[in-house]
Length: 393
Image (cartoon, rainbow, N blue to C red; front, top):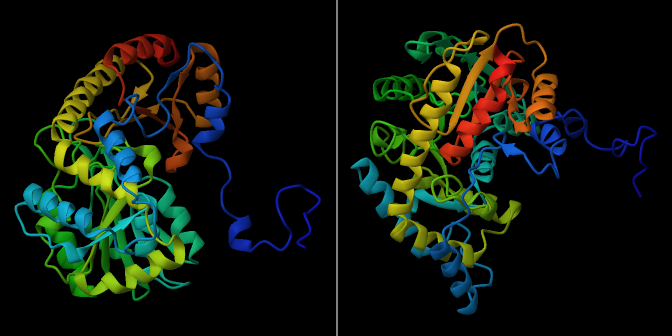
């Protein structure tokens, strides 16, 4: 039996890679607010709406129909077919169902992709600021993460320098990872840069892993630009997506990975080894979400668009706010606070004084930033912004 160490922090024979994982995250701040009745929660990447009833009813019906057994490793044919039709319609380019593997959420899709393309000692180039779990995924597999941090500009938004990005690549680079629309920035990679990045990676035999979980949260068109618009079926391109955000299904843990058709068997094996597949009744409910959910998605995105403007309009003229960019997509505002050097402490202080929960920038690699998730009722957001206004005067 493994022996617990004297510090009480785990077992002394735990892998070094596990012991060195960071244990502090946004949830540590959230714990301080548990049970507070006046709390307004803006720290996690989810909204205030529960899953639509028609999707819940579909899951319940699927269970009554007996869809509770082991299933296809790449996903049930009905869902893969629905996703094929859905993506083909969004991007105006046929995406066949043999390019789709269903996963238990977007994070599982990322991990399966990393497991497939990299070995210990390889590196992944990441466009920052970005959701921090990609760092943990690369670390768990013994890889090196190389960060290219974009520069913020209040007028033009976050700016990507592809030449500097390419300079980070070498013969051990197996993938470039980016999120668009991005968490925490709301940055959207322009189509022309997507094409250029694909050409750079094609020439070097490097995978592109694109996190497009927020693809429907774009405020000037129905869908954000996608790497799938440019990639041929057998290009080294993996696109991560999820039902969590657009259909308010964060707790369901169901997503999908779009990949070259030649990778389907390998991914089926990885699914088998990691999870043995995604619950069948959830997959049937996901079909219903795809086929009947467009009115809900349209409503949610319109609501977020209004909420974004509530937050940005409230922050833009406050004296201590720096580098505030009005995001093009996703559901976050990410901004710098003049003089702030400990974002965790500041978030704790704001929580205690105002009852508003914000996400600290340390989670995204910069202690001088804070993040607000605005996927909530604009009226509640207006109250939250009024409460925290004195913190930035």
